[in-house]
Amino acid sequence: MLKKVRFSFLAMAIIILIFFILSLSDDVKSFIKYEFSKKDLLILNMYLVNPGIDILAFDPENKFVIRAEVLDTDGNPVPFARIILNVDNGFGSVYPADVRTNKYGEALISYVPPEYDSGTAEESPAKAVINASIYRSNVTAKIEVKLSRSPVVMIHGYQSSGDIFENLMGFLESKGFETIAFNYDSEKGVAYGSRELENFLLQKKLDYLSQGIQVKRFDIIAHSMGGLVARFYTCSKEYIKNSDVKKIIFISVPHKGSPIASLGAKYFEGQGILDLIPDSELFTKAFPSMINKGLNSTIQTGNIIAQYDEVVGTNSATLEEWGIGTELFNLGKSNISVDDILNGTFVEAPVHKGILSNSKVFEKILHMLETSLPYPKLIHES
Image (cartoon, rainbow, N blue to C red; front, side, top):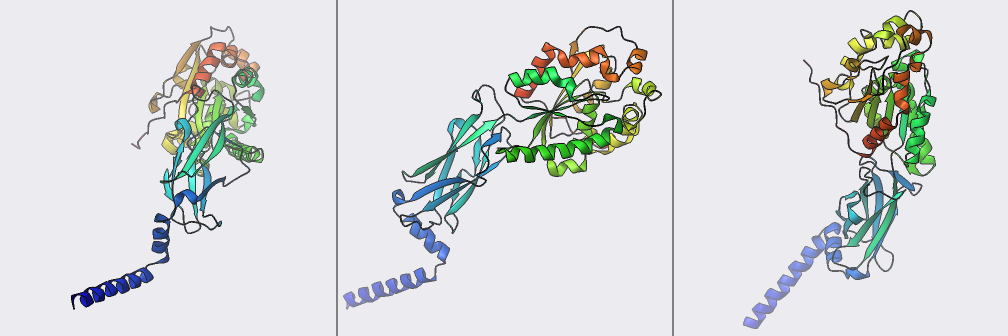
């Protein structure tokens, strides 16, 4: 009698178990099947989602998507396979670092490049190795990604051109940077230059993609009025959707305008010279109404000025309101007069122009490009 009871209980338990298993969802069944599978027999592959990309720019915002897949020995996808990922030597990171495949046996992983560090990125291009393994197995796979420095865009000032950066560009290129001069009609003003800069950067990203290089953000070196163009663009509403500037290094920029511009308005025509006047609408209305009152807090910022600059005084060049210090260089005095500047062009002022051909300034710019710079502090509305 006892044996019959035991048998009936066991039979009932088996029946209940069968009904329970049959009632399970396909996902739960797939999960259980995977957990009890022979994981060392599985196949793990990794692919670039965009196989046309060969090189990434160093930049944590320049994320790159990788697809991992797990198959069984018959080539069927394996759902719920657990994949563990890491990057050799911590050269960037992956997210998520612990992931399971979907019902198609796939998982998408984002590789996040590091900031450029000359100490760890001696090769050009450098190389990151992303490793993957199936949890509790000997099955592994890896994929390599080449890395290079972000391109540096040069923005000239009033009545100038990209040629003014010839010496600086040569120096930076000798150090492994790729430099690009952005030319615009400065006499049409800062807002015009801003629109041109936006289009220029968008086109450059497309140009790099056509070469197999993914660039999310650029570093910018801006001289004189070019700094105002960079500020206007990066603090505009249009910039929010692009977010394509990582760092700005200002050189001899009249952040509060140039007194000489008030005199220059008698000699020159166009919106450009009017924008440079200290009490112009650019400084009294436009910048104060823009993102963070005209200096984007999400962009690393450096600021350089030469002592005795004929066009931009040290008081005008300061960014103290945003907590950004100013690097001051003594390049000597010039004998040029205000009339000399106005009779020629603004850019011909020896100190104002000469700062772009000074070896000490070059070394400071190089250091700024290779290290992290401070972010402007947030200016709260009063």
